[in-house]
Length: 110
Image (cartoon, rainbow, N blue to C red; front, side):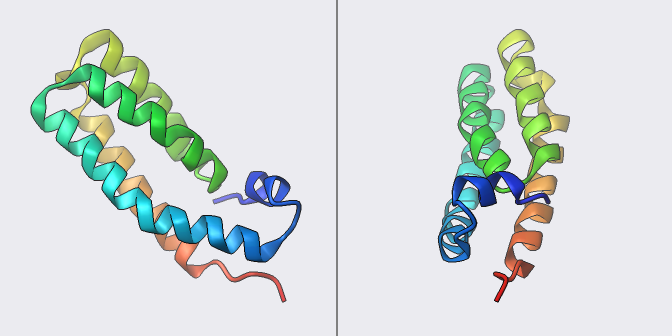
């Protein structure tokens, strides 16, 4: 996790960063549930759209690995359909759990 992008976006305001992190922690689980539901329903276009929607949020939170996975997932879902994406969805969900754990442990500088 590298919060440099978020820190720049918030102009170093740690309270603002904390709010954005809190929003991500609150909203990300439902968004990843939508990603998994799109996979289960076999809808490649919806899967690609979900991945596309999650990408900037992952980037803001310093999840560069997750950002890359979601980018690949979006491209693969559009090109080959949902059935070709099960492994990437599982990896992205697992990476999101790791990112959320890291974000929960982040403490604003005093």
